[in-house]
Image (cartoon, rainbow, N blue to C red):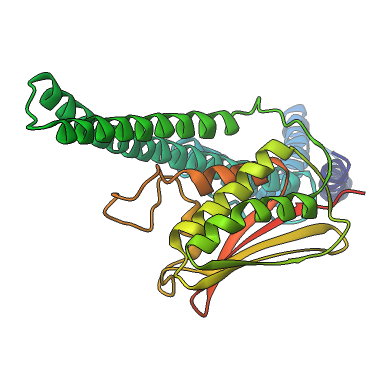
Amino acid sequence: MKKLSFKLLAVITLSFFLSFGVMAALVRMIVEYYRLDEGVTVWQYNTLTFLFLFSVIATFIVSFLLLIRHRLKYLQQMTEAVRSIAEGDLGFQVPVKGQDELAQLSGSINIMSQKLKEQFESERKLQQSKNELITNVSHDVRTPLTSIIGYLELLRNQEYHHEEQLAEYIETTYGKTIELKNLVNELFEYTRLSSPDMVLNQSMVDVSGILTQMSGEYVPIFENRNISIELSLSEGLNLFIDVEKLVRVFDQLFSNALKYSDAPSNLKISAYRDAAYVHIAFTNSAADFSERDPNILFERFYRTDTSRHSEGAGLGLAISKRIIELHNGRMHADYQHKLLTIHIELLAGD
């Protein structure tokens, strides 16, 4: 409070000197009055004394108020700002004037207002996200559940004509049950990863070895689809990671490339290190994203098949991104020349 105290002390001092000047002028006038008229009555004396004291006090008060009026207006502005914020005008900003404590208070009010606005927006988006989650889950659960119930009713009523049709109904029901199970598992995993109590089981690992091993495992599957895998991996890519979770991310990226790449084509996997990060990229041919932001892929329940008949719940990449974020990393996508690249950036280990 030093700056404001000094200003207030300066105002009081100046007001005192102004009132002292008025007092000196009045004393001189009274002395001259006495000198010219020696027959002053008691009433006149009391009146002059009262006027003298009143003038001095009035001068002090008026000068003091005039000198601090702009700061009083500033306080009134802050009061109105706080009232506006309390009434719901989040984000309202008070002009910051000067560098004293009142200016600091205005800055604090502005920060509070902005934080409240951001918190409100975050809560609004969270509520909207929850509503969307409920809607999407309801749809994705209802679809296989309806099929399961339908086929079970056919089986219960023995509405099949031969053993092959019976086997087909059972196989379809089983497939839909597995689809429902996978959906529930993905929802559970996403919810678990979003929990603030989530703890990673981290250890120092060379990620190039993981990518090399996983690529070898996927090569026969990709070759069956006439898709080749091309590796460009630097050595010494040490990361302090939860291996199980990162393997899940890579599995998801391999699976997506297998599902959505055109054939014949190739999947390019690169990894290198700079001063602070290990950069990993999966590049494959993909659907046309030229008119869309490819990062929409990381939204929950997003599918390239807008009719929602594609396999899976659309949570795979959302879960993958959450895993990378838990490692204090970044995951994003870009689309150029009909090639989709998923980028992963993780803090390099020692």
